[in-house]
Amino acid sequence: SAEALRRAGNEEFRRGQYGPAAALYTRALQQLEASGDAAAEERSVLLANRAACHLKDGACTLCVADCTSALELAPFGIKPLLRRAAAYEALERYPLAYVDYKTALQVDCSVQAAHDGVNRMTKALLERDGVNWRQKLPPIPTVPVSAQTRWSVPSARAPGANAPPATAPHGKPDQTAAGIERARTLKEEGNELVKKGNHKKAVEKYSESLKLNQECATYTNRALCYLTLKQYKEAAQDCTEALKLDPKNVKALYRRAQAFKELKDYKSSISDIKSLLKTEPKNTAALRLLQELNRA
Image (cartoon, rainbow, N blue to C red; front, side, top):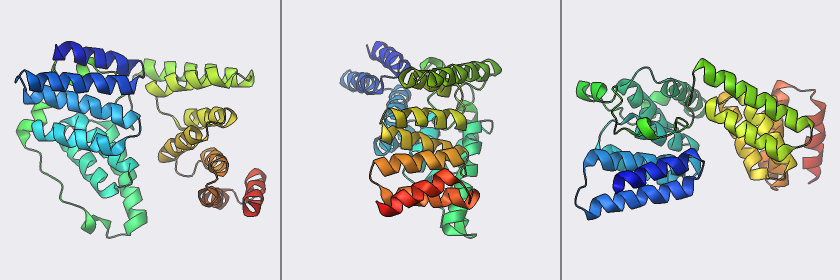
């Protein structure tokens, strides 16, 4: 049944198997269509779940498409709004991300991920478009009161009831005190493994920690492991995540510059080192890397 396929998809997602999870959600959608039992609400949930898979896999355009379809079926769903906002943000379509984060806050003003998103987008748009950035925004839809209440009560059908918590990408997946404490323990276990030279195992620990609490230092630590393991794309991505949380983080800028250098993207590498040197003009490692890059 579609329900069984959805549950199986949730299970794969929990295990970090985003491709297989997306395939199961697709089969569930096809089954609903085929049986003519295409309840809008159920289809919307499956599309939002599949969008979460796309987002995890970095397929942002597909994520946007699924979220848009989910929102057409069930307007003002908080999860598709947040996922689409995150995808737009990753695609650097900041005005659209801003509108989705703002809309999500109208639906539920307690969503920390949306508050954080609005703050990041405000900063990015101010830097890019100057003080009049608001004039360039598309209109922000007004959320009817009915939608505000409808989505604030978690229903058994909502993906939140069955989906893993770590689906809001820049949100705080499991921000309970216990979750944060567990994340810290996992990070420290990762640090110990790095000292022993076991970078592969350390990556696993950092990944588990990040599911519970997205912290800048955990991203930069995992990036260091990826650099050692010669997984340069992953290293660069982790540094980018860290810089979203702390735009002037020296370790993130330095490690991303190292990753870009290995990926032969010298222009981006030099740009990161120059940003770093604005904060720490006498950073010897950065100055040395800049010399190497200028010779490259």
